[in-house]
Image 1 (cartoon, rainbow, N blue to C red):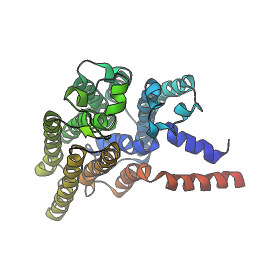
Image 2: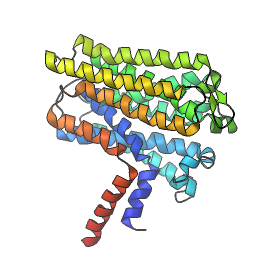
Image 3: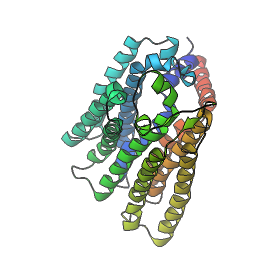
Image 4: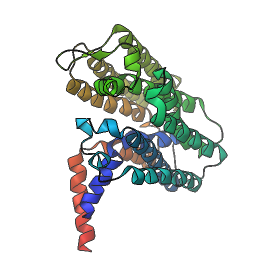
Length: 343
């Protein structure tokens, strides 16, 4: 198999576009402690995030392989196609554990960083294996939220043994963000297929169900649940700026506030589309994608005027890079393959 094909296969296998969210978490955690970060620590934390990401997503794909085989959106998965066998994928998953701990040590992390990382792995594994099979799905969403927040805390713990108010606010944002994404966005998007395979999600608990003509029925209690979480997220997002934890001067503070308002409005708008009556699966899927882009961007916006240029550049690269279209990455992979073949 040519290098280009191998790289594209790996791109699909690890769900590289989703790495944007994973990669930003430990960097944001470190940013809550200091606006500067050594190049070695930046590389190390991105590596930790990649190992954590690979562990969670690939383990989930192994667990859900029978379900994914019936999902049209998962036809390009190497596991679904049989190119990679479940045993091989599990071996890859287990390799991420020592890799993540080694990179945490290399980045300067100590006992607290190891504790946060270990907690994140345990909670991630629990959700992947049993999350959609618990009798009370919001608990599963909450546990996974704490798992992702633990990855953010790894970034903070690499620099210090004490968390700041900003660290706690951002960690709680991640917890409830995952609760919303899992319990509403993901549950609604995958509702029909989850019901087909006997899984139990928050959307089902709150009464969502498939309707006629491939449209979904979204009950009022699910809408109230979603908007309550969205209001909580907005409060946690704006709180650090209102306290001016970053020490911004007036101009930077005003620009940050304006951008947060604009992007938060877009989040609210796309959430409304997701929860709108009579939406088809394709309409919901498109709205979820836009919501994810705007919501992730709000976290970066908070730190734009605070971080050292090198730190900010790294954060922007790992946040925006994986979100570029697959075609763009395919071209880059082709050029990389040509370079190595030329050698």
